[in-house]
Image 1: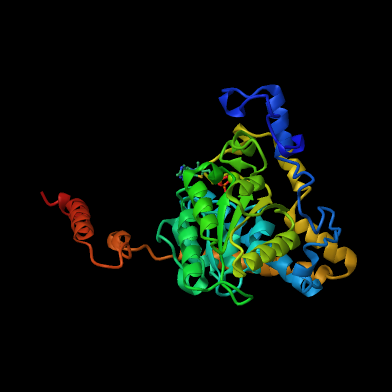
Image 2: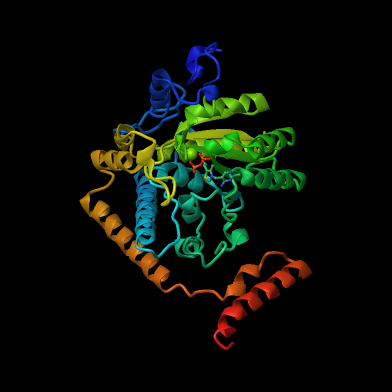
Length: 401
Ligand SMILES: Cc1ncc(C[n+]2csc(CCOP(=O)(O)OP(=O)(O)O)c2C)c(N)n1
Ligand SMILES: [Mg+2]
């Protein structure tokens, strides 16, 4: 295997994971691994906003003219603005927690907009941009984070499953769903259906993801594994989790793996369309590694300054997913100041709506937590509900004794 396929350590140096404290060389290798996508990176739009032709992928974005690109730009600005508003609302005590997507807008909008109406998406917990692309009203999503709801949207209508917090678990759900699409004969031509499953770089260390890869592969399930490698699993960098680039793992399971610039919305759209086409036609799974960066904290309970250097963030700011589209449109005359100002005003209005909705969200009754757990009645759950309600009742009547 050529040495450039290895991040750290070089073959023969021994496993990185046994070192309790990373050596200076490991730290340097890690920094490099978290900032450079390498020669394998599929990119159509550079960070400077230059369009790079691609023999393999141009045909998948042949319809993307300035108008489509303006729409993708608008999508990304809106979800970023919503993300910043939700983050601020958590800081003001209006949300229990928030999971920022900052920096991952292109990976989520590009892949989300590649999906067809009948495709199914399985998210983890950071995919607010994909939710938006699937037509989920982001106001409905905020209930989870205000702790008034478990989900909030009709996942069948939107073809977007509930969020999954258990790392990697949705990969098994998605593999089963995609196997069902295969068994029901929904693949085979352009009209075929596919499933996309989102997970992080850290999730690739989970057994569930491995099992999902195996089941997806042996059944030729129409399943796109979309790994957003945002370089960090909370405080654990990718280089401490894998000895080779994540997309290369696909080879061991027998399906194609590809690394795309996750900050390039055009490349994410093209590569995901290509992967979905493979799936629709019955060619089985594809692994996409979207090489991107988590620009904010893991969640609002995390402080990334304790484990990563600010230089890294500064470097990634130069690869901002929104700025490159703005540069391309502005330079080529595809959009003017009025357009950019208009999108910003729309985004501010969108954020104001989210805020108003959050402040006025009704508080559900305590027994709401027991609703919609099972499709059929459950005596065990009924007993738990009764016990909980009489426990709460004890507080109400405590003063009477
Ligand atoms: C099975 C399981 N183990 C541990 C956790 C705690 N946990 C929450 S997020 C996270 C890191 C996930 O990192 P990654 O897969 O890279 O996704 P990202 O948060 O970066 O999007 C961990 C370990 C969990 N939720 N579920
Ligand atoms: Mg991660």
